[in-house]
Length: 480
Image 1: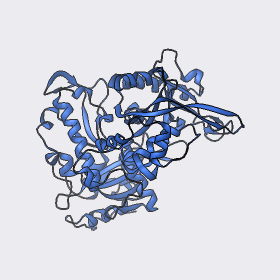
Image 2: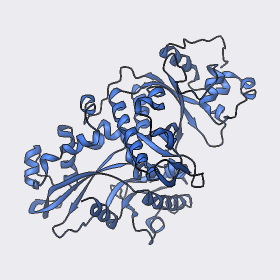
Image 3: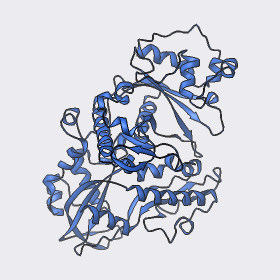
Image 4: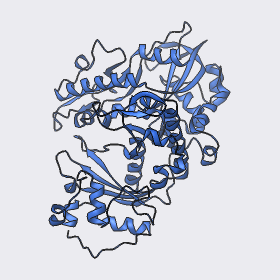
């Protein structure tokens, strides 16, 4: 497809700028602007596909201005990659980076003064297919989206910004984590050998970090596109279909986390029977009965907190922990099954799904044995007697930086075993590991997964990430 330089757009009109991008869909930049334009491209930032689009396609010079790329229209252009896994699914490759954090300058900037507020409220997102070894200008564009950050999202992002700034003001820039916040993260930039940076309220040097929209948030944008069944879409009339925990009106006066925690206030100390009565729920024999109670407390009639708009956009996870009468905790904590194709195809820990899970935000709901019991017959017709538990406390939690470093070593070990085609707990689990382990989690012996080493044939058992029991105890001890 030949590129017509006669094509024009109205630089004051977001829709015109968006429509001008549509010919890029299913084509590479080289195919659109031609070999000569690509060969003649002279920039110090040849690795930046977005800058190439700006200069070669939209015909304006990229700059470091705090104003949006299309200043008159208030539109910022961003390219973001999708990767195709061995099982042929498309996945968000990475978080959407906004700008590097200058620790010394940002502490004096309000959210309304920030680069995010000035530039990123209206985004022209060009999703492309990332393929290792393929030049940037030879990567295919898949979707074009004009995305206006909804007011409610912007309120949560404003609080995220303030959480990050306040941590820097406490002299804790070196302890920043993406798990500190909901939608806007302070992501690592550069590897461990990158130059550390000074921070204003501590002599401890801190790794370089950037403001970014988290992968979970970008995943909801991708889901919005797929739900439209189109390759181009505008979200100006966007209405979230997932159930919501908080309204924009509530978020103007309080933080999302405070709103959530207050929902638990009326349930403090209630026994299992009282909990069921108060939330209008029958006695439950399922293994996840307490997770269902916690979800109902947060969500009301919608029941599943992890499927709410806010939890999905933030990558938040609700987890329940039961404490026995003697203070012990008998169970480890499970997470999702290992996606072997994702681990196989992901080279960088910071881009991995496990990093996203472990560096994310958790909401823990604690239940203590209340001295009661429940009896029921299981599927085999056997009478089962179980202790019951009363609600004790809820709190938000982020994995400490030192534990994330330990998790990185564990993930690299798991990835190597998958690359070596040793998909088995005997290889996954190390006796030196005191925090995490892997164990089977298929529905039955026929519930198998694709082996990325042999995607056309062999299937392998499904295994799941777990927190060790001792690690769960440690979390509870420090927070309850």
